[in-house]
Length: 503
Image (cartoon, rainbow, N blue to C red; front, side, top):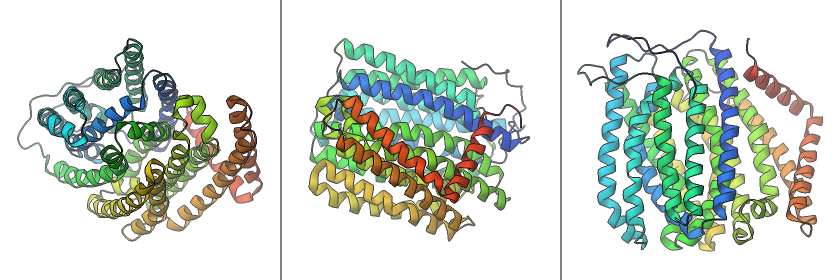
């Protein structure tokens, strides 16, 4: 685990340090460290998918997916929006940090108790008696995550991204080891439960060790009001956003049962978990940086443009190649009994690409404290997604994925238009940059799909390899366009800043 100097003893009203010097250099280095750590996490995640998919059934995954939807809703209440409020605060005293810690911890304990009581009704709603025990055991995650929230926020606020990386990777690795061991021993879905509990517990221990501070008793007059107000507005937004992102899971769980939900869940996790592990650290780095650039609109706009291009020419290109090679990729990763996952995987990869394009707008809402406006926009997208998924559900699992994809494609241009009405952003540059990224990704994905289809009679490894080679060749051709070359040069320069030791 990363070492850290012991925290200085601060008076209750003294501000917790928030370094400003060399902000751009520190942010770029932090992004590099974070992305390196996420690469390790992706390897662990894919290893988990490959191994556990061969040891567990779609039914096992479907049961866990139902409970995780419930846990995810509770996690929003447990966080109370206070992690983001603490990160973006211009000033944060030790007394405020302690107060926020106890707020999150108390919320975690209350939610754990409520979840234990709700386990029976949840199992009855989905018609799966096994959900009672699973829900009650996983309720412990609220307590553990409540204790960890402000430690992670403190590391983020201090731009200690290396410590965050070590914390997350250690937790994920420990969870994977426990899950595989339990699955080999025949534990079934309990292997997945053990994985969740192990991961959050290890993350808590590692975060406390890295942060090197212990909370003191809460004090009256600490000035928590602004944090609670901002957190409350963000919490509402997060609830609506979470509901919109899990309509597909809830609908399949209620209408189709755990097995169909398990198939969808594997496709969703295969696409979204690695993607989120790359987008999440980008947010971790961007949020404190943009919060400090609130009054410098030109620098803020330049950061948004460069970040969108960096994510677009890397993540979206990767998603396009994955969508084009969906059939051989799914067969290689999950095995032959999961072939129904392929079309769902391809549609979700396209949806993930569209969501990535709109991520920079989400950063602006958070960094500029536009919680109320974000809530109203998220309500709009909830309606859009509900309609799209509801229509698509007529055609089963693939139809739900198609509805989710259609909603994502409609949301990203809407997000920029909506945001530009509220606060200054370089909307035109962001739209044009996204258009170039999309065109390049579409060419790469199409080339990969044609090659994979033409060579489907070959062994799966050969089909996948030839599809990827064709896709990469198509992507390389886009560099002949001068503006794309200029974009790529800017992304490479951004990458060099990430790994530079001195700037």
